[in-house]
Image (cartoon, rainbow, N blue to C red; front, side):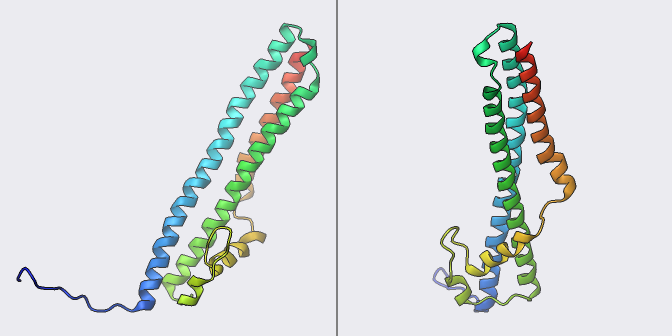
Length: 178
């Protein structure tokens, strides 16, 4: 082979190239959404783990030092609301991410099996919020009515975090009133 020889690859089917690119992109998005999903759950648990001891210490401190202006339950209710809203937002984002992962995995399976025919027109219709192609956004919204999480997942994450926050707040109110 000489220095100036050119290797020419046989032309590939443009339809297959488009399918392969979508599959690679979807797999990359699945990895990204999985990392986001895990991050949101971690944030919820961290806030819960920091909130519970801090509110108990605050309640105990207020009770021991007889700080009557802080004994008002409104301070504790405000802290409860802020922590609950933050944890709920994190779990809601986690749920949206789980639905997105499920929809993207469904699309990858359909493309690989040949059930979904893609063409260039599909890739030129974008949704303005996430800049997904329209058919991807439609598939993600198809999952809106379904539960992407099991009841046990809901019980062992959302309910445990929120119950811990509520119980710790009421215990802190009790400690402050002593």
